[in-house]
Image (cartoon, rainbow, N blue to C red; front, side):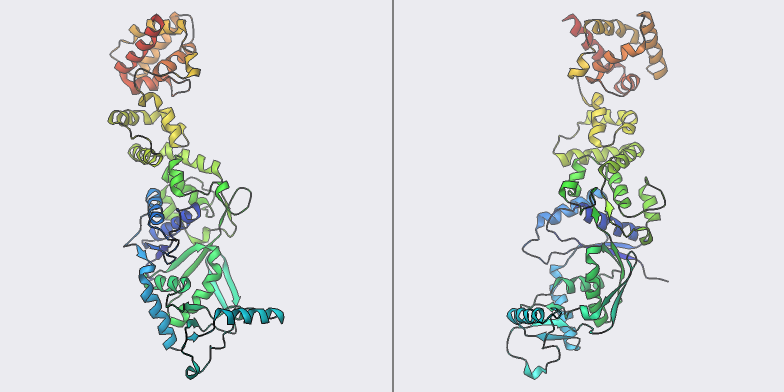
Length: 470
């Protein structure tokens, strides 16, 4: 029986959870969740100058919005520094690492001489095989003894077999002269101690894998399965940047994209399952595999994100959509819905959610249910409320004193009224839209009347008719 899958997301808390990081987190989450495995979170906060609690909080909030729940406690890389240093000393004691007393000036002089002679500037320390008796009483770093011949082969689930000549690998520093461990050591030790079986990360880390494998081999640890995913590019084929829309995850929430739509879109950025574009979370968990990840960079496309978001809004459960809207309003700093507005929105969702690509669009279409009397009328809609139209609404109101407030009956009443005025219902629709919502573009008149109910509908029509008498 194979070991359970364990993946991890390991962001540096130096900024927001950007779109590339969000996709990396999603891929790790999908791979673990689809196999009954564990998805872990590690904050790589060893860079104390740049790491901030605010950035950590932003990353956690971005993941919470995307619904990427993690297992176990959050691991702080900085807090494991003693463990990292202990591994470096263990390798030193085993003769697989050595003390290097070279100063920065020594290394610079070596490289300048190598450059002048046309040789490789890869630093080769004279202390690698030095007799410990010759060691000075001076500061030193601990370097690993890299293999000096042959090749290192990275078996990557996305990139295939990647071969790196060992004579291109230097004796990497593990422990600095002040006793602090380097990032490359910390990553390997943490991944091993956390039981990570699959390392799924950006392909900008591909070369790091060869150097990190030196530590795995030296410690006799199992090397994880590697999967280095291509980075995301903008529509112009260049590396994704802010001008392409490479914003923090929470900014997409504030723009009104539903989390399910964002998950769907991010999953399709560089991964595919046949020709499927729209899929549910359950399908994504069941389908996601490493073989479906392409080797070429994915291109960020805001229109595709909008289209998928619209499909998810349309198919979303009403209660989940209400919750999403609450989160969206909080993210934008907008006032929360009142209890009455929330109730009215719940009643209106059926007739507005299949026509909106974002949550702001949905709320605009549901404006008629969220607003209250007196209705403010926008300029375009006001053109439909001239004196004649208002008078007609006044005449219509008594006809709507019916006990059967359903679509079929309302259609009959309005069509008969239009005929009595020797006009078509279309001529009546504009004034009705304006009176009921203050907008020129709305859901169907009948849907609005059903959502608002008899009492509120009649009150709004009466208001509009009385304005004609004023």
